[in-house]
Amino acid sequence: MSFVLEKRALKWIPLALVTAVALAGCARDGYYHDRNLDYTEAAPAPPLALPETRNAQRYQDALPVPQAAMQGARIEEAAEIRAPQSLSIGSGLEPEYVERREAGSQSWLVVAADTGAVWPQLESFARSRQLGVEQSDASQGVLVTSQADLRLQSAMRSGSSEVRCERGGQTMTSCLDALEEFLGARSASQSVASSWNAQRLNTQQTLQLRQQGDEWETIIPQPIDRVWAELNHYLALDFTLQGQRNLLATSPERHEFLVEYMTETERGRNPLQIVFSADVRKMPQEIRIVLQPDGNQTILRAVNASEREFNADDQRELLERVAGYLR
Image (cartoon, rainbow, N blue to C red; front, side, top):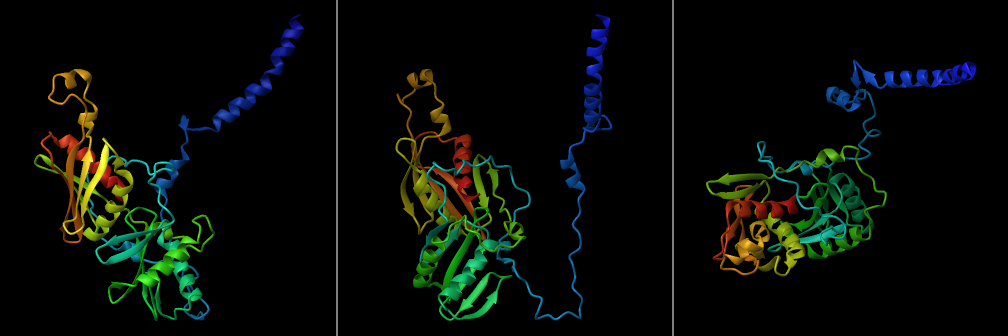
């Protein structure tokens, strides 16, 4: 009997040894070695340099990186803004691969791809239409042809690009229509040439939410026409829920929107509060969303347009929601 127990005990010895070795490899100085920390000590290596004696005509940029996305000021010290609502599939807000934006007499395209991926498509468009390229500057995102100037820069939303067809500062509608059709035929999942450094171009434009006395406002480091076009697009898509949030009117000349919105304070009223208030049911209220230019940036405000209470928390809540369209 003792021989049987001894034999069974010996069977567990190899397993115990293997377990001890495995656990020893999972720790360093008594704790688990998180290799993600190693990346904090990584330093960039110097760029490779070709010999000066090389044939310059044989060595050129195979995948030029447009630097146009670096345009625009960046606010360094920004207040923390809560994560915006998700523009996920099924919400009705997911962007198409190519969409049009308008502000006054100007029109342009927003493409759901970074500038490094869109630039080769612009070159392909110019070749396929035989536009006659007179100047090509990938570093500035400018492609000058005999019929129009194609200009590329990063869009307001991260990972997207803006493309314009202009001549003398005026939108060339026929060129923009043709380019929209050309890009629309390209699937976002297609394999297109793109720079390895394209992600560096997606400079996050920091939105600053700040409080001025009892009022909140959002500072957007973009010109007012670009901000107006984006908000006009997304408010028309999202503010369509009667009794909750609804876009009532727009004023492009004054850069304002009139919306009907039920604030979080109103949504959170309990039955007892409703019984002892003048309003026997939860109701939305009219609010003006106002854009004001401030140099090369834009100030976004929410102004009460009704007789109902609109406190600072309600104001911040709405501004955070609207600013979420721009990130």
